[in-house]
Length: 331
Ligand code: SF4
Ligand code: ZN
Ligand code: ZN
Image 1 (tube, rainbow, N blue to C red):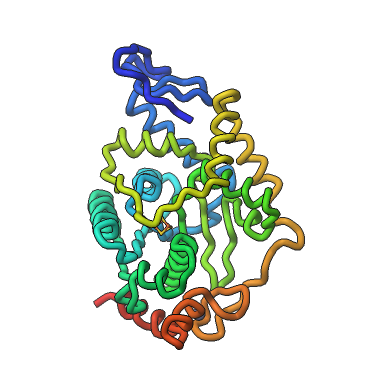
Image 2 (image 1 turned 90 degrees about the vertical axis):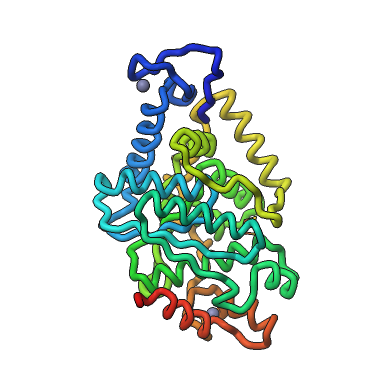
């Protein structure tokens, strides 16, 4: 959990003669801007190596929301592309149709993709399904973030299958992963807990492998990385953003432990990965193709088909996949 060094306080960088701008307590380092950026890039590179994440994967799809986490991931991947032996990094953004918020998200994504010379596919939920996220939420009467999460998973996977990439890279950082994992453990949701690993293997033709390249990256490090690198990420919050009191309490507890023992979260994440690789026996739910659109589901009917059948009386998965295919097809 790195901390910016205040303007009036002078400390020398641990790696050069320049003024340090960041204190990294868990590594006992003070770093200048350039050495901090290099330090974070090196940490992500080592995470990928430690968990043998790529295993020959050459083409990655990065899900981009426009926020600091996913855009930092895009910049990190582009600076590490050569060292990681990647041939292509492709961006994907789902325009949810949440008024000004979605407009600003799409702009932030497009700016970052231009700066990185990254090919990026933006698709609109309304164009694909006929509905915006607020309309689906209103009609389905389900919590916004749970509908949104399910739709994003559906589309990221559908786009990855369509483009034939080797894996999908998500912007989840260590703080979020640990909070989710502890919440899952307390609620004994073992199927979800088993997914809190650096690599969630895919199923050929059905589910693309998902990588958490920021598995060992602190949220505060990412924020500093984004700010020091001058990444123009979206700073406004989604109007649906909901503060989960359970998760907030867990995050507060983890922050306190980290302040007492710098590096605590890192060792917890490593233990979690070590004990969780291979899954938790008896916890995994079977993944079967949806009977309508052939996308992954646990019951034989995927979330998109269930949601759209509830709203329109007809599962829209097959139509949506066809539309997606034509949108992604080169002209
Ligand atoms: Fe989606 Fe919820 Fe995030 Fe808004 S806050 S973008 S609804 S997951
Ligand atoms: Zn330095
Ligand atoms: Zn379906």
